[in-house]
Image (cartoon, rainbow, N blue to C red; front, side, top):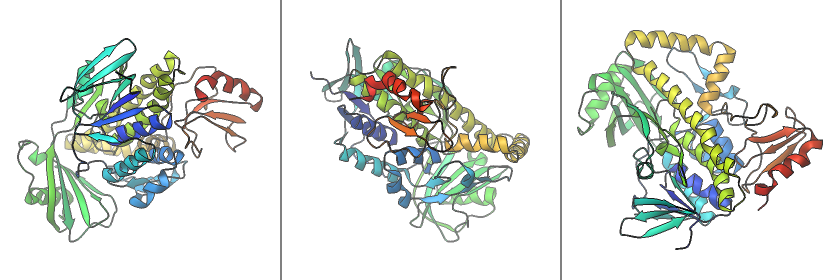
Length: 446
């Protein structure tokens, strides 16, 4: 059996992005997806600033921006507003675009790079051997690869087969979802309201349909199998927001429980996890898809270098070292949001006051917007490194998937060596650049 380079399991946003990154790195990639057709249901909507920067580095942001609606201000419970225009980026916004739009962009890009999605391919077995890993598909076919990455969601088959624990808890309050039309839409692009009985929000599709989302304490004991009705959604919005906004035609609805879980490790030998297979959490804050895309961009160039035989062992180890703490921070942040809107009424009032107070303090406001937007994500560095190492370097053309050198840019050191994922690998004086490039050259050059 010939090696297939990397097998990526799962063709959601994370798997598609990873496949693009691997193809850009010049290694064979086979993208397999259990679902036989592209799903028409979407849960993720928010594309945050750092994700837009990553897409921009690959020449993709300008293709996504026209598909979405920009939101420039967010108001967490407590009333204080976060102005995203203040972020140190060209993308001071949350772009509201259905997950299907992001997936379409990434699948189109994957096709341009020669990657196709093999649909209807269910993984039923996985075995690691010296020098390779094999994946068994339903029907008996076996595919060999140098590495396998599970991007197959919260109920990941790859994670289970690799024997990796998924640690955490399940939230008790049901989330109600429905796609509806509104006779009297709210004035805000992104509407949210909280009250003693929960939280509700609307996200616009941009075509007259809205995703209605409700965490309704009154209905938290309803069986998950019970269909969500238009009357139930109207009731939730009436009680929590004081208005149902003329909610009318409903084309789809669902009821589910969210979880707060993280894989104990992101790697087991030649098997890696990314996206929801590695971490799931409350959807409050819109962090899920963005975190998965960050995983993919971090892992892709490292895995490609390893397949090409150009990466030392520590480079692959750095994926978990860098991304596991990010996932843990996201779980911590979204759990805090969950407690803020779904805890006891007294607890929510105290927490809301604390958040409102913190937002009025410039330093804590910058911290919160940095965490929400992804702009504040930074990776560990050695004590001897320049303080920029491990931090983002935006507005760098990285469309070829390689390293880049930035020199004489205002606000930066004289020279910066930028990794393929848009973070600084080295920074210092221009006279030291040649030595830095020499240090990294084994996997810079292809």
